[in-house]
Amino acid sequence: MTSAAIRVTHLRKAYPGKVAVQDVSFEVRPGEIFGVLGPNGAGKTTTVECVAGLRQADGGQITVLGVDPQAHPEAVREHIGVQFQETHLHDKITVREALGMFAAFHANPADVDNLIGMLGLTEKADARFKTLSGGQKQRVSIALALIGKPAVAILDEMTTGLDPQARRDVWDAIRAVREAGTTVLLVTHFMEEAERLCDRLVLIDSGRVVAEGTPADLIAATPDAASLEDVFVARTAASSPRHVFA
Ligand SMILES: Nc1ncnc2c1ncn2[C@@H]1O[C@H](COP(=O)(O)OP(=O)(O)OP(=O)(O)O)[C@@H](O)[C@H]1O
Image (cartoon, rainbow, N blue to C red):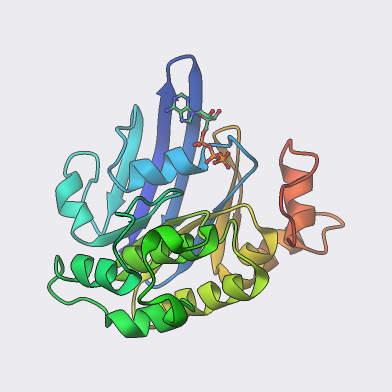
């Protein structure tokens, strides 16, 4: 057995009237940036919520750093940083105050101002949360996921709503935290993001893995594909991926 940072084996999760995840398996190696890609409703968020111990699976096994997040969600949450699509903070709290407050929960937090700088928020460090744009709030939520210097960061659609420069700042920040030793599990439907940032990825469609590998391997293995976008279109039922090269 390899010492995978995350191992998901035959995951299955149904909601009333809807099987969101039919059969998903993958392994994330320590220090990787690993992507979970797929069309809308493919089961990406449900999968990573189960990995984070936020949802109870109906079947399959998951380990995160060797611990089962379904059986021991608190034990896993000590070692992971999670960013999901919505972040709610008090309107009046400033960016620096929010990060300082969350830093205080961790034994060995990241430097607040350094993280603010990495995410391109220096000019907004003393701005109140309610005055931030959607993209700025989004970057605060990423910073909150990273403030504890987690062994594993789980980021869901982290750059949706960001302008191209902010998106590139976030990619650089993710590369930097990976260099510092964090394993990154990333949900995205931006093909360019996956191609540039991910070491390996799984492509999920209708709750099943339809492809897995490095972006280059997937492109090479798909007839006539010149980009991950081509792989996406060829391997999933989606005729036109959202936000391609947005
Ligand atoms: N709480 C819920 N109750 C019922 N159905 C749900 C729930 N959450 C998700 N679903 C359904 O399960 C399926 C998978 O949803 P999920 O959010 O995991 O997909 P996704 O790949 O992350 O999609 P998106 O890219 O749109 O966020 C979808 O059909 C969705 O409508």
